[in-house]
Image (cartoon, rainbow, N blue to C red):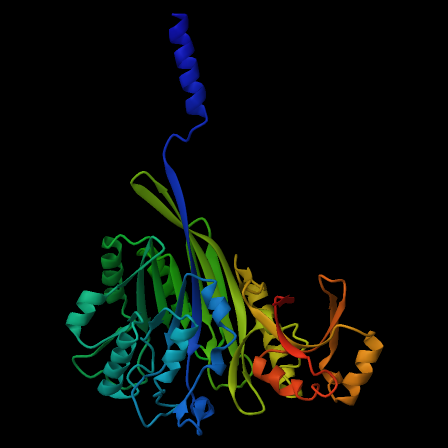
Length: 451
């Protein structure tokens, strides 16, 4: 009897230290972008006359670390890839090089149902689909015909052990009729309910609906936007992401109901320079899935937004700037006083709006770990700072600043400049080579020199 009692005592002691059911937790990070547009000014700026081709590399060059920090980046392609002649507003047809660059920096999925879907009619809609397919970019919202929609909608995305259902709708197509047999998903509550029911049967871990809705340039959602969001939630959606107003609108998370809505992310990239239209926000959502035996529960773990602003420099080039990287920039990357003022105004206006009306979604201001902050020129490992300042002044490089650090040999190393591009540092180093033949360009990542 004593042995039997001892056996049960040991059994319960051991069992008490173990979970009753096997459990595993996985996570998925999503990043949503606002309206991707191409006005004529942007198309002209992307053209390289020497090479005779379009190049958007510089436009998106600061975004890759942000996109790579997420598992899945989704954007709204508010234009057609309808081929030449390339045109901006009111009927958009952008160079294919735009989506080449988007894919290169890490955009994974694009939605195509918006009021510009048929700007180039049947040819433009179908060519857009073909180009995206040729690049292997999953997309949804427009379809060549009914069979394609039936087979491919909702779009099912598999990533990191998650299964997502993505749906996409627009309020209209600017009065241009959709040519049969093409299909553009229009906002129709009867159709949407059927689509959401189909999505539910596909057993996704989360259902995402991207809506092209609302009133342009209005910072508050309409009654219809709120009603449509409620309908999506009622019929199984967890995330409802809004596009089209071209300005930011509030974001709301309901933790108890595991639901999140963004009424408008504003412009990710466009040629619009008016106040509030010259930027937007990137929404980062982290999903958490807890698996117990054969069942799982997915929830919205955290949600943040990151501001981004579209800079048009003195050379009339467009560059998308993550606010976290450039808000405290001391390199003078934004050189024009008017642009500096517009940048600050966008930040202040956005934070005022979202700080007042957002529910449960705050700004994320951290810079991804692998962001290249700047390049500098290492000029000396000897002398005092006064001596170095004097020589820099003669070389006309004093305006680029001076910094120093002590290396592993306890020697003081001096650096001048903070350049966001290595080419800029290479250009200025020539001014210093007379005084410092051994000067070199070095790279700093998050403020630390990388050998």
